[in-house]
View 1: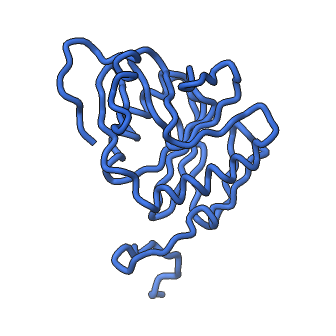
View 2: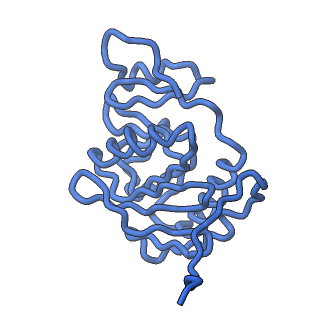
Length: 202
């Protein structure tokens, strides 16, 4: 992920609309960030599984689920593409983008995007009023559910592969994570987890 070449003025929504269609950018506080490299297949599998579960849950209701790439305009100098978002206000849904903060944002964290997602974007979501954010780590499999507290976030709950996730904003939404994180693990990815057992003394 790299910073775009210097620009005399902060990048705006109008500038963003003129960016090449085959390039993926986000603008935060007027600075443009290239969203590279392309997402991994594992990343895309998680997006598809989560989006599918959420589409089924919200089907027929007022809330709509959108996977990336969907432009979200949070201000004239803040435009992002969350991995998955939920919008419950139909007036925010435009032909070209979502106008204003979604009700829920989900970001799939990768090594190349971790600082961007946990730093710049999370700060932006907080000051823009996104009330709930999920940060998804593919492996070791983890979903951190954050809720807005003032203009920043606190962790409401952390879920692992064996858990069933529930949303603070949507109490009826429950997702069994075993199916979301159902992908093969390479031997070199194996992580030694802390295990609970009695000490070998006494």
